[in-house]
Amino acid sequence: MSTLKAVRGTRDLLPPETELWNFVEETARRVFARYNFGEIRTPIFEDTQLFARGVGEETDIVSKEMYTWEDRARAQSEKAQSLTLRPENTAGVVRAYIEHKLGETGLLQKLYYIGPQFRRERPQKGRYRQFWQIGAEAIGPPSAGSESPLRDAEVLEMLATFLNELGITGWRLEINSVGSATDRPRYVAALREALAPMKHLMCEDNQRRAETNPLRVLDSKDANDQEIIEKLPKIADYLDDASKAHFAAVLAALDACGVKYEVNPRLVRGLDYYTRTTFEFTHGGLGAQNALLGGGRYDGLSEAIGGPKAPGIGFAMGEDRLILTLQSQASWGQQIADEAANTVAKGPHAYIAPMSLEVAPNALELAQKLRGEEFRIEVGEPGLKIRRHFEFAEKLHAKSIVFVGENEVFGKTYSMKPLGSRANIVWNFTDFSKFVSALRGTNRNLVSGP
Ligand code: AMP
Image (cartoon, rainbow, N blue to C red; front, side, top):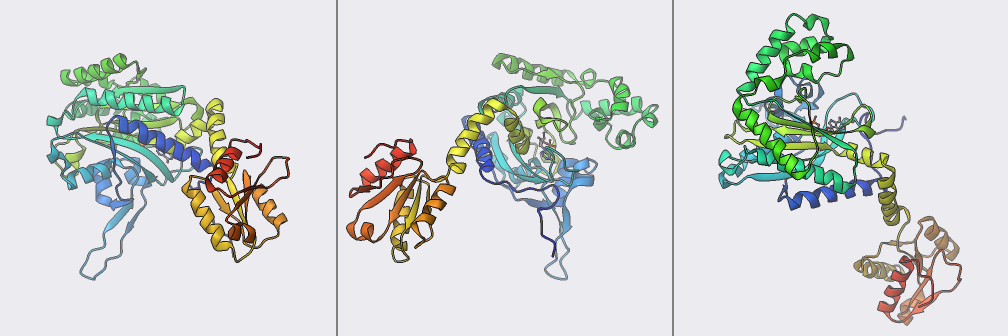
């Protein structure tokens, strides 16, 4: 029988690397909390219609990349429902906002999420079919200030703070405005007109986009088409006064906070519901897939999926790419790798060696007590020869070995030996708290006697 493997485009995350993932997630939670964001968890699968309407039928995500299936109908009279593994999380968050009538609070809802997303893309470095996103949305009724450029700037400043606090250096923020729902149709019409006489010169994908979603031609990476793309009309010339003022206010607030950016007039993003501000953070250490995160304003999304008017701004970061970037940075890598190594690779604080089967319950009881004191404990197989216990303890990189035998159980004593020390002495304690202090001491590499 052939051996089974993780499906193409998916992968296992193993310790100690998972420590890095936890570090990234904890940093996100800590930073986002300071901006008064709370966590939301939405289902991994949703009604296919949510993405068709919320992301847009003609986007690559919906037209080519979704994992969709017909759920089995439970009764003959029932119609099978089409379900989809979420390819992104904004649509799910906005659906939850509508479903739970969060807008009726009259407050801006600031929600963040951390979780896997699924897209059937061609796998390569930094691009997977199951990948993780850390994202956030600030959404609410206009009366709660949800349209304000202050929100855009606050979210961007939060991202800059997050990346800096994570230790990612050398990121670049590109920003643009794609205008309001009324600016965009005028611009799209101008694009169509400009593309009409030239599109036959472009690659097949761009020819199709020129028909279905001309905005997407702008973010095409096709090298041969760049010359044509350069000459296309710029969105900045089609913004009305309100959109121009909005964009200027976002940039002024970024300047005030010292967040560096570059305006990129071709940054349009692939999703249909984006209005006004769009942005992307990139990093040179990532290679071809250089986008760390993308986001923007989506003032029309709630209405597009049947909800009330609820403008919002949000972003999604590729957690896989944050990790890759951190790993590519030597200075950071060393610091966190050392920390991770201390907790996982360097093994438990103590290895408990139960000397016989009879004392196994006592060994577990002692492990429970020590874990209660925050020690990381491994319990060995009861009754192994002492030499084997030492072998396991060393293989696990335990800092000390604790013996539990009849002497210890009946005499109510504790015996331990620091590992890695040359002194071949076993320390005995009658007092639990002194024993604990000695164990702590071995964790600080103190090897002098108690
Ligand atoms: P998007 O939802 O397409 O705007 O993507 C937001 C961010 O998610 C991107 O900037 C990437 O960092 C990350 N991302 C998107 N697709 C993938 C993928 N297939 N694998 C890994 N990360 C991804």
